[in-house]
Image 1: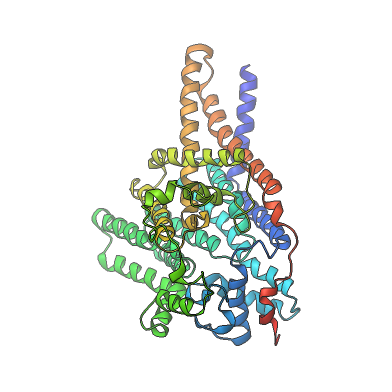
Image 2: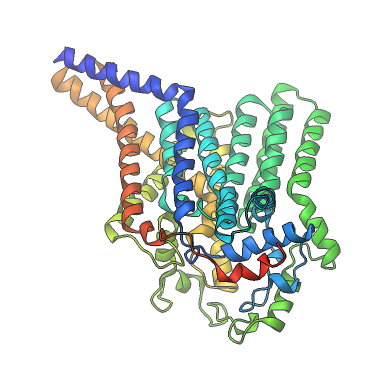
Length: 489
């Protein structure tokens, strides 16, 4: 019996050493990227929300060699009456070089659409890699770093959105970069590379999605608090800390801040462009789609609580937000079975449980990082709720994707807490009845449980693709909405 136990422990230790290998850091992101690419090659153009409008920006920039103004007639949506040039469009901008290279060989719109999608395919794969880097720093066992990357890379909705052009996955990546910078700064101290990384993440966040702006505020808090502690405890000079803060600001402005400076000049000080966009939409949108025609919970007299829990037609806000956070594909019409949503509900419960276990993650000032991560989730949820209540009732989980990586970090902490609890329980039973070696129990429980969870999550992903996402994989159809932009190519 003891020989079998030692053999099992030996196998698990070998698995643990495999997870420590840097090969995993390359292999897992590449596998995820190839999966996303396979989806991008076969995803119907009629199942990709807002992609035509974002691709139109890229095509306009390529054809005209200049950034578009919000009211540019060729990119204004004829139904809603405004263009996406009024909102941050970093991913569409990044897609331009891809289009420029592809257009040297073909003008086929199907091919160009697939080329544009490479932006999100790569962002998804890089986000998995960044998640691995975060996990290796936060957790004392490499299997938990892999579990975090699996939670991120094999969530069906994340994979779906990594296969077409949108701002949600780039926003998740930007916030993951910020988290990595936080962890490095808290563990190793703030240096030039870490501050440049933080500035990069903030800049990417600014140029992708307004729902992620909580991370910008929290970055100021995390840097400020940790810099104050560094000055007090380690005698780091104020001059150096201010210089590093200036570096963060400079990199962020270079990457994403220029867009808001440009808006300030173009739209008479409205750096977000909300006012001009609404004015154009009021003038050009079809009847029923003008801002003044929008029916919102607020102008119906609903409270926030009513909006969250009472039906809006056939939709309940919290339920559809949860569904579309994990897997509700196309234009919110291809669902998964309730049993699968129940399984993803367990992930949410693990994340809630993980809040309690997050205080043990390996950073100095252990409370600061978990508090910042919790605040990032609350920021995203509050922003999404307020937007649905006051402006446009849209219970979409993708609006919470700035908090996607933090949620998965907490879920990983939850699995870790459960594994520790099981280890303690088995130890108690072993001492009382079996008298097995305690180290064998630890090795089996602490490596086997997260490994089993990771395998089950991948299996769940495969089922979600087969049952739900497959309805969107009908072939990359020609999108007639973009045909006018091909004239003159």
